[in-house]
Length: 280
Image 1 (cartoon, rainbow, N blue to C red):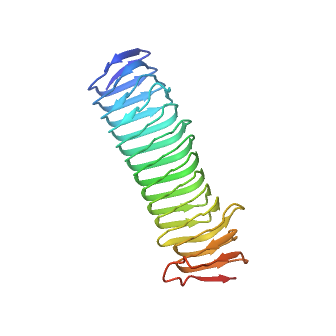
Image 2: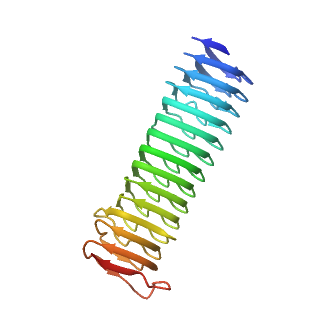
Image 3: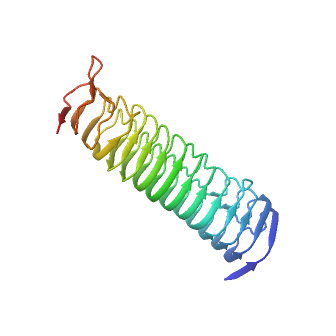
């Protein structure tokens, strides 16, 4: 394997179509598409300043690197990425990719990041300003995760999340087959229009959570002081450890509560309107 060490590159496509290449302490200055159409690339202790450095790349490893804001849209249309101990300051990362494995990665400006990607694994990641994160992604496995940013996980499928802090308005809209364990979900309008959303030992806060859901399951979940008007038009099976402020017009299923809360049913409740609510 060829190695390039302690070097600097800039301009247009300086390492175009490189294969079996290791970069060590390399800086990619302003320019475009430094490593386009490459394969089997290892980058460590590198700094990326130019746009689009990794497009159409197969099998690459990035560790102890920095992507500055100028390296926007850095990783698109690529496969089989492993990234470790890296700071990504550039927005609009990870598009149309298959096979993403991130560990100890910090993304302070994650706007419009991770769109239309598949087979994603995150461990010990911290992601901020994450508006529209994970749009239309599938097969996601996350553990030990912190996120701040709205409209996240919209239209995702086949997702498992553990030990997370997710602060996001409109999270999990239109999702299918999402399971979340031992996490805090804080934001308005959680999980609307989802199918088979399963929350286990989670803490939920924010107004009007979990409305218009199909086949929702909650196990031993708790609710914060802003969680009102929950479950409208939802079909669900829920065993709650603490109660929401209020429940409104659940469509069908069952809800088991440890203590009473306000139950609202009115003329707008949809058939079959047979949800069973019990106090343990």
